[in-house]
Each structure stands twice: as C-alpha cells, then as structure tokens.
Amino acid sequence: MQTHMISLARSSTIRTLGMRASATPYRKDIETSLDNGMDVAIDFSGNEATQSFVDELVGALVLKRGRAILSRISFKNCPDDVKAIIKFVINDRVLQLEDQRSIA
Image (cartoon, rainbow, N blue to C red):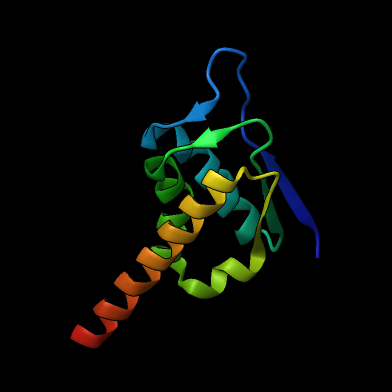
C-alpha cells in the first residue's frame, strides 16, 4: 500500500502549530489520501503542536472513522511533547466513542 507523506508547514518565525483552523486543511488532505486507499505519514519535523491542533488533525478522524483508522496513520519526527499530546488526544477520543456506544 502506498503511503502519502504530509509534512506540516515549517516557518522560521512560528514553530508551534496551534490553531484548530490551521489543522483543517491537513486533516482534509489526510482524509482524501485515506479515501484513495493510501496510508498516511504525518511529519512534524521542526514543529511543536498544541492539543487543539492535534485534536483537529487526528481526534476528529478518530471520532469520524473510529479507532481502526489509526492503523493507517503514522507520525514521524515528533518531539516528545507532541507524542504525549497525540496519545492524550487519541485516548480521549476513543473514550468518547466508547461512552457514546454505551449510551446508545
């Protein structure tokens, strides 16, 4: 299976990807790649990211497509802080899905 590499934009003045809205175009690119049968690698090289950015980038995908989608997404060159945020967001959204299922 092909893997589509998504490199998050790096700026010499801004190193932290923070706004939820700035993650939306990347998420749409991820969704298009997944819909076309590709796996996705997200490259964080040289970037930090906030919880809001990661939630829009990955958390929204988990809510929309379920936990299984994570088997088709990988994360590259993540600083430790970003790894921790990714884990937190994923766990939070998986718990939210489980809660929704137990209510239904």
